[in-house]
Structures are given as C-alpha cells and as structure tokens.
Length: 285
Ligand code: NDP
Image (cartoon, rainbow, N blue to C red):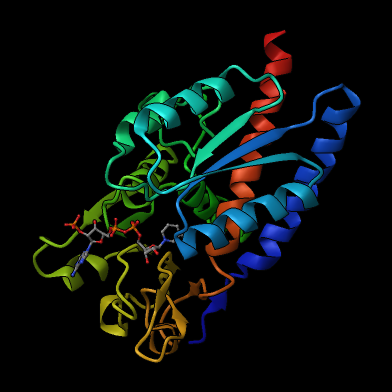
C-alpha cells in the first residue's frame, strides 16, 4: 500500500485565501486584525518563527507589530508591555515567542495576556474553555491538525486516536480536540510500557515526540492515518519528523510529510485566531 500524502502546504494555502477574504470584509467594516509578537533575546529559531509570522500577517492584509526586547529584560518590564498591548484597541492578538530567558516565569507571562487576545490558545482560561467545549482560541498546532484531517475528508468520530506525546502545547490539547469530536483517545509518553502495543491500535496516530524517525512501521497498523508533528534535524542536519517516513508510508493509509505537513498549518491557524479575535470585537460592540 502507498499512503495518501496529506499536503499541508496546499491545505494551508487554501485556508489562507479564505482568511485573506475575511480580513478584507472586516476592513470594510473598519477593523484591521492586528497581531503583536514579542520576541525576547536573540534565539535564532525564535527569530525565524517570528519573521514567518510577520510575513504571514502582511500577506493576509493584517497589521503586525513586532516588539523586540533584550535578553536581560526584567519580568516586570515584559508584563508592563503586555498590559499595554492588552489595552491597545488596534491589537487583537498577542503572542510571546517561547522559550523565554530564565529570569522570566513563562506561566506568569502566559496568564498576563488577556484571554480575549490569547491567539496562541495557551492561557488556562482558553484551555478550560476548550476542554468544556466552549468558544475558545484553540492552540494553533493541534487546531491545524484537525483542519488537515477535515480538509482531507478523514472522519474522526468513533475512531481510536493514539497520541504519542503529552506536552501542553501539542500532545495534551490535540487529544482533547479529538475527544471533543467523539474519538476514543489514548495518550502515550516516555513512561508508557510497550508503546507499539498501543500505537498499533490507532486508526489515527499522532506523533509529537521530538525524536527523529522515532515511529517505525512496526508501530503502525495497516491503513492507519499518521500525523507527524515533529520538526527535528537528523544526524546529517536535514529536517525530519518523528516518523520514519519511507517505511511508514508503505504501511499507512495516509500520512503527513515533514516539511509541508503539519508545519504550514500552525501559522495559518494563528492568523485564523487573530482574525477571529478581531471579528469578535465587532460582536461585543
Ligand atoms: P516536548 O518535548 O514538550 O514533548 C515531547 C513529548 O514526547 C513528551 O510528552 C514526552 O514524554 C514524549 N516522549 C519523549 N520520549 C518518548 C519516548 N521514548 N516514548 C514515548 N514518548 C516520549 O515536545 P513538543 O510537544 O513541544 O514538540 C514535539 C515535536 O513537535 C518536536 O519535534 C517539536 O519541534 C515539534 N513541534 C512542531 C510544531 C509544528 O508547528 N509542526 C509546533 C510545536 C512543536 P514525557 O511527558 O513523559 O516526558
């Protein structure tokens, strides 16, 4: 069997067109969606992510504000900046690029962002709202995975979904989104015994581990849908996922590649959340 390749780049491009159209509509009503990104220090990977976010905003006709702060900034100053952005009517989304330097408490920073502008979906209020099935900003990577499946015509209800990884930004929330859509969900992590026993039962297998080529053909049931969240470098410095693509694609029914799988969806859903936030300011008027 050769797996269907789920093309995240194509699906992201389609979604971005829809977002751009809605941005135009909102602008006609006098609201330009605005995203503020705070970058602390000069972590190279963070700088790259922030640039892609700025570029996406511009392409979609949104307002983007980049705030760069030095590595040694105090927590107090960072929190004061967030307060200012919370009160700024031109800003609908606030994102603080993680990781932050050691002197700053990440949780405190996340909780200081207004839940109404928390377009990353990391604030406990949004997480709680997501868990209870209420209107919320959904975290971008998990949300992107759900959109990939929907756009690929892959149904979720009644399926057994096995998530490998339980981080707060990917593993835990993606399992919750599947549960909200009536899947049966199993979580695996570093203490799971006999990982393959669990993963082989998956109709849909999500790999969010951060170890290059960790999921092999022996972990996968024939015909399963395999979603690879990993963004890693292999021993030759080449970008690769958590799934050994060549061997698994011979067994899976559908699979996301790395790159051009889940990756392009993350920023797309960030743009979607910023648009949603801007649209909701009109509803509150
Ligand atoms: P974390 O390091 O926060 O979490 C990794 C998870 O994998 C943990 O829950 C850990 O278990 C589990 N794990 C580690 N080793 C094993 C093992 N041997 N067997 C089973 N489970 C194991 O990573 P993230 O969730 O932040 O990211 C995961 C991957 O996704 C990374 O490659 C990252 O770069 C990528 N990523 C991609 C994004 C995208 O846009 N495509 C966005 C975000 C992340 P335990 O909890 O027990 O330690």
